[in-house]
Image (tube, rainbow, N blue to C red; front, side, top):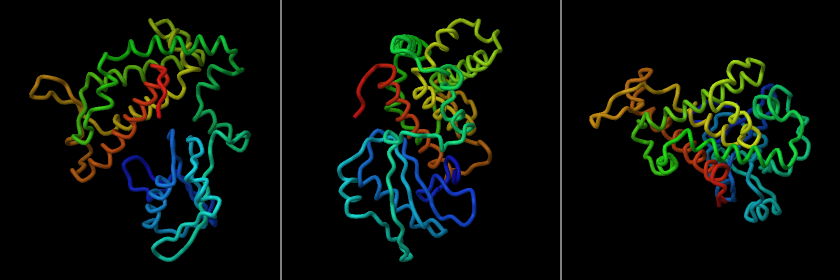
Length: 274
């Protein structure tokens, strides 16, 4: 992976680990991707300091006619320095063989598939897992949690601890359940953890989004008590960072909050996200 959270990545997520190759990539975990989105990503590469021989966008989105139209006529991007490279869009839903992905990477990306669903679930087992997921997850959050995710201005640099603590608590419970499924049986006796383990197969995408949101916040915050008497986690004073660094971090918060909200609506409430 090229760079990390809160850093300028010049439209590059993936770069070759072996020298001599100039194939670079961008991963887009989105529901929709059109030619305007692709153009925006390509424009970011103009500031990338290295030569690019080929650029690939990997996406979870479905095909879009605007991208098909461009690909029919051949897609290339010309950078400000005059260099040109071909552009390819690869759709995850159209990949039938993932054997090229190293086993350890698969285990890291799809942990539930290895910890719980070692064999394919029957339709009834998956239905039971979905029902458990949709029943248990709301119990971890306040009734206004989803509204908060979708409306909070994360650029302010602080977050109500009542919502962050709920996210962190579910993250910790997932970690304990994970250890329980690996054989540390004592972790499974706590109330709710058996149900949480049953929800893992159906909840993989939601729990991944929750973990990404939590991790984007965890490393940058301190707890404070606001003038309103409420607790908040805040960027202020952390790691000696200046105010100029805050927008990069809070942009990650906002982006991952939107994705978590979408996953909540789709996986927990059963709503269709456009």
